[in-house]
Image (cartoon, rainbow, N blue to C red; front, side):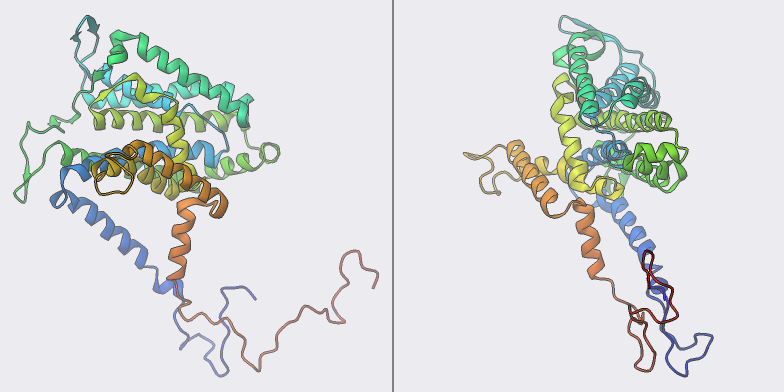
Length: 406
């Protein structure tokens, strides 16, 4: 008898009338309702919270996009990459150069194409994907720590190029990022001035909605990938490349495609990072950024899109919150630890605890908590006294077990 089969009580009507409604049917409307309510809260949030939380939310949205892309590569396909910061840099620099205006900064002469920001965003995403596609042949021949070390070289190369290519990147001083605009509507403080319910909607409020749309699109696209045939092929590839090849999966082809998709996610995250900070600088795209993104997906849960979201929010927002409330948090600020250092200590402790006690990460903890609130909903799991139950002892008519002589 399967787990979902309901045991009929004596005298019950064969059609099932009088049975308690299955829990799945009674709760089928609950999840969509919660999603709608959550979306409504997100849309109304700029009307009630201050600018700090909106800017933190936009920074977290950019981290969510990047973490989802890295989780597809590392958690779903099993390819270790430390080059995520490099692909973020490609997206950010491409956006700044394509949409920026040429001019001078001290003794440096900066270049720029002055194209619309939406063009700069698209170019940044495409160039980051192209960079990942060019690296994919090397990734297809390596695995594990060897792939991680090879990808690490891209980070050092990227930092050197950012410091040296002054005309494009601004050198070690960096350069400012142009305001984003879409069809003539700018996401800055003015032009045009906008009020909603007598609340001024400036840059923070406008970027909040931009980040919400981009993060939601990235989330849905990743979920659709995992539910499709390519997603199942990538999971098979993660478990065993030999088994995937035997089942007809093009191993090198799928490795190249997932590197392409992951790099495009990173390129979009880089553009959002530039918009969040308002500028780019070479030291922002070093090895530390790649480690932070690995911390996001490990804390959230490898292979889980929801886990990538939770991990990105935790890792990206915690330093900002520590910095904002440093005076109220013990051992942080004043004579204690700096906000960034305290956040790193907490990240390290959280990673150790996750690896020891909850390998599924924050997503596993969330699923466990949600499971405690689920009730059986009328599902009968016990047999009535007059219903015979099958035991593990074989009856005389049962065939002998394999390898048995009786």
